[in-house]
Image (cartoon, rainbow, N blue to C red; front, side, top):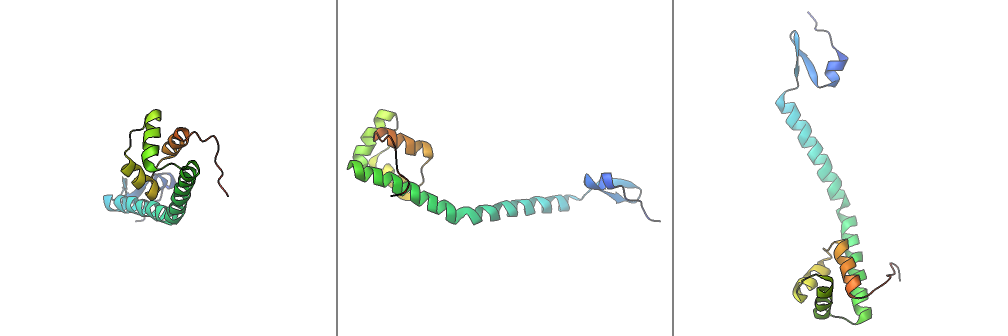
Length: 122
């Protein structure tokens, strides 16, 4: 005897089992979660080279402004204190050279350096 398919129930993830409908197995559910995780991870990995280029560009912009003002990391550290940021010169050096800083940190640095505008292309 063949069990009739009810499309509305199948769309909700229910499958026929003998005479009643029951949800997909836990194994199927875990597998679908894993596949979604892998898909998201792959997308993030595909974006990494682009992210690295943006980090390099952010680092370059900040270093160019430091060079224009002829300011080192010690002076930047002191200037940032006036904006309310407490960072040592060594921490600033590491953060800027890695390019791992937020846009808000970048804006704080520009405010501390009294920079009104920046040029993205020279």
